[in-house]
Amino acid sequence: MGGSGTAVERRQGEVAEELRWILEAMVDTTLFDPSVPTAEARAAADEMWRSAAPMIQAAAPEGGDVVDHRIPVAGAEIPARLYRPAAQVSDGCHVYFHGGAYWLGSIDQDDNRCRWLAASSGVPVLSVGYRLAPEQPCPTPVEDCIASVQWVRDHAEVLGINPDKVSVGGESAGGHAAAMTALYYADLAESDAAPGLLAQVLNIPLVDFTDPVIYATDHDSRCTPSGKDSVVMRDLFFGDGPDEEALVAMSPARLRVDHLPPTYLISAQFDLFRDQDLAHAARLAAAGVEVSTHHAPDLFHGAAGLTALSDSSRRCELVHATFVRRAHADGGFRPA
Image (cartoon, rainbow, N blue to C red; front, side, top):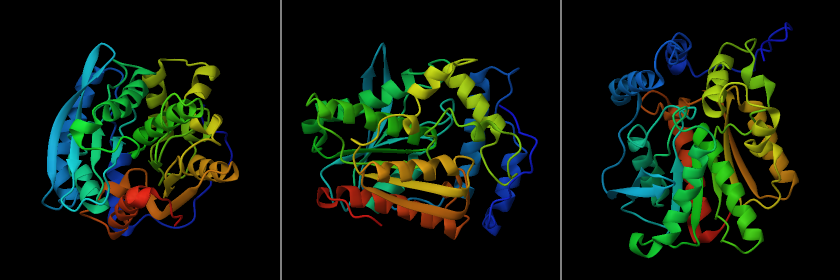
């Protein structure tokens, strides 16, 4: 799935000036080396993130309660962290799945971000530490995310959560997990087997594993992730050489969508997933799903988290929190 040999499209606009050095550093950094054990590469990436986080992320507001939990899943337990804001506007819960290409990331890495999301939205946020590939390949990470929603509903009284007001969301791979979780519960709701979800909030999600664009090497060099990164994610998540049927089954953009809950989708101009994200939002709207979108014109994939560096990043995170708040305020939906 390499380049086509045709001229590379240069996308309109420019990356936010204050973030260009970060983009250059990302392009020059290789997180995955097949000669290095995945656990070792993951640990190195975690350490790099811990050292950089105070410099690139604005501190979350003080206040609110944070409680760690353990969620039983098939044959294991996974960590989860519930953030309850001081100024709460909803008795529901937004279940959040971190990014990291399904082989990186953790609830600790997204701790500051989830504190900020809960405080800014006024909605309790449950961050879920689903199991990672390749140790736990597809479909385990997605099944963990699905199970976490049921856990919230099963423990709603103890948690002080309204089980009928649960939304899901996430960034990148976490956005994919949220989209797959929303589809699962939409299917159940149609047969009255379980309540549907209040909304899905998808932040720069991967929604189509069959899209050749995300694996191409001949794209605008300002775009992230690279095609090589996408190949690594696919092969670690599915195992080497997944067939088309497996890719389609895990591609929300290739599945039925007309029964989905209200959807909020954030995309970025210099994100290799941009075109599939915009197409997915349009397909949802055409199918009658209530859709609200935000497109960041000067950000690359994952740049919204760089809130200590950029007004554009802070603006995108505020939109993210606003989407969560809108999904829960009075249980209603108001398109942007």
